[in-house]
Length: 274
Picture 1 (cartoon, rainbow, N blue to C red):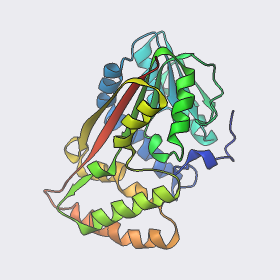
Picture 2: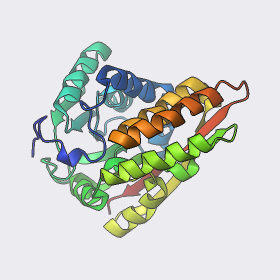
Picture 3: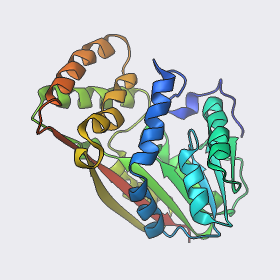
């Protein structure tokens, strides 16, 4: 079912357009999509992405990654789907800017995929499952649109693998508060380590999970905090957000230490339709 921009309930804990500064969030999404692109490309190839494949990019957002997937599949084709009308409009702009013809975008809902069954060789879901209240339902729908032998590749996060030094009570408190706020909105910041079992239970074969560390040595401490930590204040509401701002000030101060370091574990889970 195609969705309008006014129906975002199924977007789970992430709702672009409701951020305090949407342009700033768009910049963060672009940086997130490009700063570790080499790592993602390696994950795609290990999962089985090949030229000529038909690919579905779920919750494609502003389309940056869809365009990169399109470059990888050559004479194949990529379909990017997102529930947010504004992000789809941005994705069309990205397509024109990147000059890729083998990618298309449309509004869509992971819970009600209006796509032909057995039609995709490769499905990619990037940092979206952490926001889903019903991930198993999404997995079932993805299984339907995959061709036999097709691959699902999910990239996501698990806060149990998030670290920061120097030791900071403010960092620990903020991560916990933001995680609890995301749970209240239907999300799950611990989903990375749970995806293996979810794919198994849904009927995927040859399921595998690998963890790839991404640290401030790769990104720089400022970008690490911006991409992986500070934006999470948007997961909080009202008084909780005000309380979190004090934690953020302390985290930023601690990050000024010349030896400050942080890391997240990026979980890549793959499964095949039999």
